[in-house]
Image (cartoon, rainbow, N blue to C red):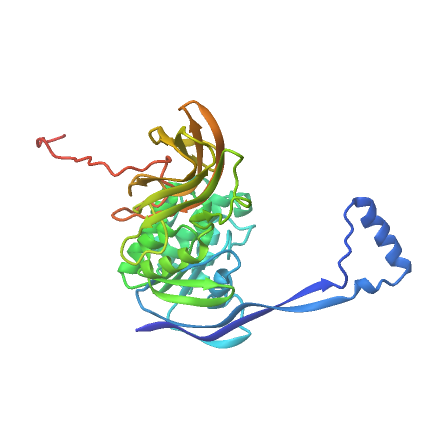
Amino acid sequence: MTVIEAQNISKKYIIDHKKGNAKSNTFREVITDAVKNIFTKNDNDEVVHEDFWALKDVSFNINQGDRVGVIGSNGAGKSTLLKVLSRITEPTHGKIAIKGRVASLLEVGTGFHPELSGRENIFLNGAILGMKRDEIKKHFDAIVDFAGVEKFLDTPVKRYSSGMYVRLGFAISAHLEPEILIVDEVLAVGDADFQRKCLGKMKDASNSGRTILFVSHNLTAVQGLCNKAMFMQKGQLVEMGETNQVMATYLSHIQKTDLEAWYSTLEEAPGNDKVKLKSVKIVPDYLDNQRHLDVRTSFKIKIEFWNLMDAVNLNISLHLNSLTGECIFNIGTPSLKLEKGIISAECEIPGNFLNDGSYALSFMVVKDTATVMYNFEEALIFEIEDYREGTVWYGKWPGYVRPKIDFPIAQLEFENVT
């Protein structure tokens, strides 16, 4: 059964700009300009209005029980879409039909009265959701326990930390059993244990037939929780469908760097009068229909360079570093006697070895295993995305390597423990 139907949803905002580009950069200039404007009219004070479409012709259907992850870069229109669906703001154009009670957690403290205590806000939020007092009382203890705010229950929420705000807000939204739960990136405020509890609660909610819309930049959380995903870009819906397929499309769009650098002539190539770089590239062995590197993907590193020296013993020393400078590993080729010309080297990095993150590939051409001819620093910078299955924990996996090693566990004997 369709519970959310959106037809050609558009949302326009008006952005005001002052005519002219001159800006006051210092405090003195700001004060001087302000005094001048009291006595003189400045043509540059004329305000120019610009139309900004945060959403443009977005259409989709969501069925009961669907867990839909909304993904996209900052400014893609994700939060605006959730605000429209939550009736916080009206669309400029288009129609929305929603069947069922909606609970939204879109930003810290949404729906809270700062002067009221945590206890009072639980009843206030429940009433806003359309719950009767007896229904709220039924879930009250579970809400307080989940949020972990028992000590501060009778304290005005204006004194709560942002983490306490989020925990209480999510606990109320999740436990008062709305038919549709809308959650924005606010879970990022909580610690890993709280995120794990929230994701588990959302899974329980969807298993009971409730519908969830979940915005997050944590793609592993989206992958683990959601059976469907929406990819938003510049206010438009690029793709909606099965989660892994939509995530593959999204990741292929946001690949930050090319996996290859090459130079057609010696003149443009980096290096010196001894060696010059011809090309360096990463060649992934993609799984299935992948279009991006993730932790499972094996890949080859291929290097070609011009050797401009006669009869010389050379080897390559390759370094893989994190972007903060730590060396993950260093490997080297054998030393080989080489003549002038193009030299190549290749190695393979297995899948299930490197952790997700950003990496910089550097290498040195070394003479007689001792003298560096040239150091090609950060010849390539590339990303490895996360992938996880069979877990309900989606926090950042620690470390730079993430090897897949057999690590069996077994019951050796049974014993009554009293």
